[in-house]
Image (cartoon, rainbow, N blue to C red; front, side, top):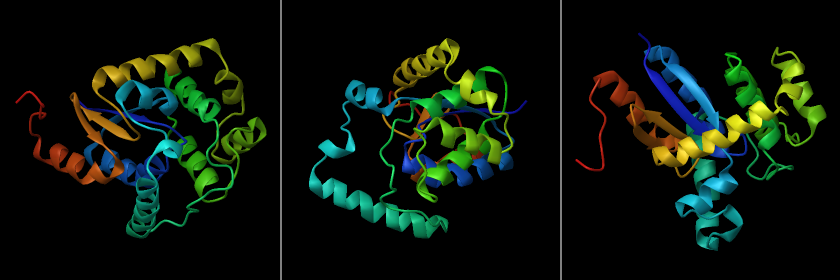
Length: 206
């Protein structure tokens, strides 16, 4: 039976973008069943003690740019450090992923295309026309745009937030394996190690 990995993230998150291809490779390597659960970071941060970027100390903001450059080089990616339309409202795109997940469709290609559109091509994911184009380019039916606006998708989006906070998630991306949280794409090697070893999940109560 395939092991289950839950991924809490947002299409707004450059770190989720940076780790997406690596995550996809790990999932294929270990034959994981990946459950993508978008969450509203604007609601995660105040509930978990975090701060939105604009409210962080300037030293932290400067260091973030250094880290983006380091990981851009490390992952062999080509993206803008300050995309034209970032930050944007990620909810419409995030809810499309929710709608796909609810319907049992695989959202991985849409997620990858949406990340590339934001950080590489500098397109506005808050624009429904752009989302429709991304869906088409990634091989999905445009009807997912309307399904992302449904009440079911919004309910799923809010439930993801509750589940994330219940699981101890406080940022994007967070990978949850058997209840153990791996926060940040820079923890993917540790996730891979845990899967390879087959060890029992670590717990902060240990």
